[in-house]
Image (cartoon, rainbow, N blue to C red; front, side):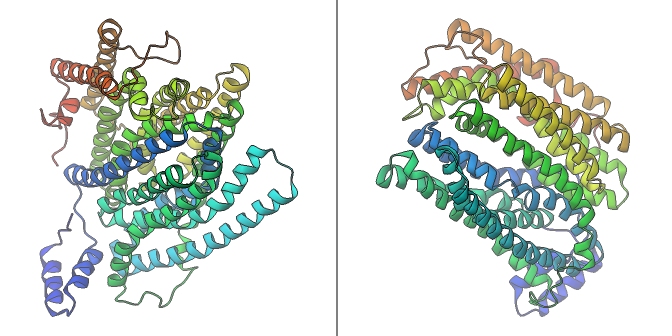
Length: 578
C-alpha cells in the first residue's frame, strides 16, 4: 500500500522526484523516508489480504511438495530421519531469523524511522551484515562439531543417518535466517505479498528435487535423502533471494547508494536489540527446544512417527499460515506505531479485531479438520507408497494438532501485542511454561500410555492452550479489557456454531456418507481408493459443514462469521470506525 504523506512533506518530496535523474530510485526513496503511516482496521485488513495472497500461493506449492513427498517415499523411516534432521538443523531458525530477532527488530526500526528514516535503514544494514558474519561462523563450527561426533562416537545406523543429513542441511540456516530479517523490513514497508510468496521458491525447488530423485535416479528413500538435503539448501537460498532484491533497492535508496560506508556492528541502535533479543531468545529458544523434543519423542515412539507428525502438522498449519500468520504479520507494525503515538484506544481496537478475526477463521477450521480430516488425508496423501496404515496414523496426528490450532493462532496474535510494548519477558515466560508442560506430557503419553506419535501432537496442543491462557491474562493486566462486550458475544457464537455444525456433519456422515475417524475411538471405515470417490467424500462432508456454518451463522446473526463471506458487514455496531 502506498504511504500517504502530509501535504507539505508531499510537496517537498514531489519536487525532489522531479529533479531526480532516477525516477525509480526516487519513488523507492519516498517510500523509505515517509515515517508517518496511517493505520486503521481497514489498512490491517488490506495488509492481511496482501500477506494472505502471497502466503496462499506459497502454501499451495508447499502442499504440492508434501503430496509428492508422500507419494514418492510415504512415511518410510529414511524420510522420518530427514524430517528430524531438518528440524534439528533449523533449531536456530526462529532464534536468529523469523522469531525473536524479527519481533525485536520491528519496534526498534519503527521507532528509529519516526525520527530518521536513514538511521533506520542503517540499522537494518548493520544488523544484516552482523547476522551474516555470525551465522557463517556458527554454521561452520556446527558442521565441524557434527563431523567430529560422527567420526569418533558410535551411533546406530538411523542416528548416524540423521547426523549426516544435518551436516548437509546446516548451510541452509544462513539464507533462511537472513530471509527472516528481510521479511521484517518488508512488513514495515507494507510489502506483504513479497514476504508471503517467497517460500514458494523453496517449495518449487524441493518439488523438482523429489521428482528427479524418485523417477530418475534414486527411488530408494535411503539413497535419495542426502540429495534431497542438498535441494533443501538450494531452496532456502532461493527463498532468501526472492526478498533480497527489494530490500536491497529500498536500503540503497534510503542510504543514497552508500551501502558499505560506515558499517558499525556495535552501534547504539544494534545494542538496543540486546535486552529484547535476549528475552526473546529465551522464549523462542524454549519453543525450538519443544520442536526438537517433539522430533526425538516421535522417533522413540515410532520410527515412522516424525513423518506421520510432519504430514499431519502440514495440514494443520495450512489454515494457521493462511490466516493466523497473515494477520500477525500485518498487525505488529501498526501496534508498534499505536503504542509510540500513545493511542491506547486504537491499540485495543486492533487487538479486538485480530482476536475476533482469528477465532472466526480458525475455530471452524479446527472442527472441519475433525469431521473432514480422514478424507482430506486420504485425498491428499493416500496414493503411491502412502498406505492405509499411514493414512490412519497421520489422521490421528492431525486430530491431535487440530486441538491446538486456535490457541496457536491466538498466540501469534497476542505475542506482537507484548512486543509492541517492548515486553519480551512475558512471552518468554509463557514459552517456558509451555516447554515444561510439553515435555512432561510427551513423557507421559509416550512411555506410560503408549500413544506413539499421537502423544507429541496432543502434548503440543495442551501446552499451547496453557500458553495462550497465560498470555491473555497477562495482557489484560497490562492493557485492560481486550475483547469488547460485542467481541465476547461473537466469540461464544462462533464456538457454538462451529460445534453444532461439526455435530450435524458427523451425524450425516454416519448415516449417509463415509464416516470419519477420531483418534481410533470408532471403527475405522473402508476409505475410498479411487480419486473421484475420494473427492466425493471430501466434497459431500465439506459442503454439508459449510452449509451448516452459514445456516447457523444467519440464525444466530454472527457478524464475524458472516463477514468472512461478505454477507454482512464484518464490524458489529460497537466496533470503532476504520
